[in-house]
Length: 256
Image (cartoon, rainbow, N blue to C red; front, side):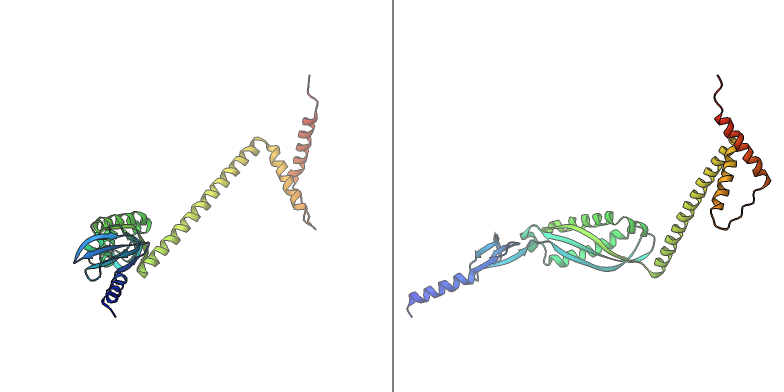
């Protein structure tokens, strides 16, 4: 084989050896003899073999679980809190030069931040104000990771595990609260019913004939049942006479 063919073969090998494919969600940082010379965009790229090296940086959002850890709240309650953080790299050079392992560093600082911030709140606040705590944790993380070319988008407290005794105490408290609301509602109903009865009594006192009509209506309702025997007290006879007089009075033509 001639020298020309050897040169062609070597050139082809060098060309193929230096080819690199950068995915759409990546960027390639090219080092030449240890120094960053350029950043390659997605697509097919070529670097000088041996002299140049490429490190690919993933720009997709990364989900980072924060493992459960015991935290003492402000009111001295021990809870196990787990969370999850979402971050993404925005500066490829900083993410390589400023930090050795981005994921490990964020994981460690996230655990510390969760422990420090959750410990500032009381248990009731942790259970009711998760959104506020999440934003505060994300703010602290973002301040630390900015120098690494990383943005922490969201931090969410995923689970809060309470001691068994505290769970029983909270269940009893919730049950007592429900019973209290039920008694209040029943008392309000009784109060409204008594008010209506008082209004009815006032109306019947102002119009005695209404009371008599109500008595007769009650008797009529009882008589609907089969095999019912109704005994009219003596005062009901006078009631009937009063009703007749009232009706006759109402039917009289008006006086001129």
